[in-house]
Length: 212
Image 1: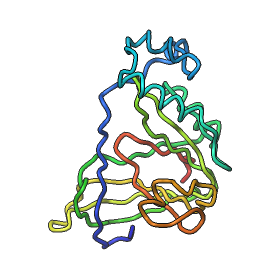
Image 2 (image 1 turned 90 degrees about the vertical axis):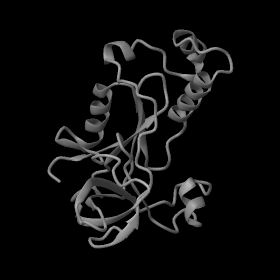
Image 3 (image 1 turned 135 degrees about the vertical axis):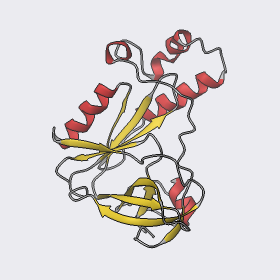
Image 4 (image 1 turned 90 degrees about the horizontal axis):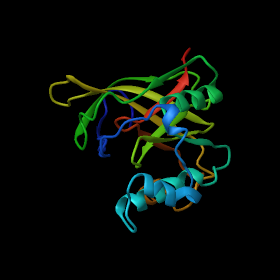
């Protein structure tokens, strides 16, 4: 579908999370960040018992502490410094970050313009960072082998005017994924049977080696 000249439906790219900010590392590093310290966290952020905030914190901490998939490297980061440190630990210090420009075109038919594959992305284990719900910004960053990264101009189908510039990621090996992964439920398939590709939503990021 991701070919120049194709018309395709665009999912909702909008960042629907509440507006929060990264904390400086000197502050975030002093805050507890584990399920075992959840009671302390609830007290710090004044989350009353059985509150939505408390449940969200528990869910995010659980996801961050969950076991990595086979061949996956993962880490939750609570500062931009931590994100850079993780990306460079996987890719080396010659890195760059990409993200979808905006949410324009969401939930509409769009025309795909120029498509560019980011060379080297498949062999360098790109680092994708997805925002998680928390009282302050937390990103769940992870790296997989056998991943391809693409950039594409997104156009209005009628006027052909450029309305967005998107970043897409394709997982070429899904054999280690859970059979109940939402992608398989949506596509009616299973582990190792298909590749799974998706757009990077607004404010999510993909780190790759800079020479690409």
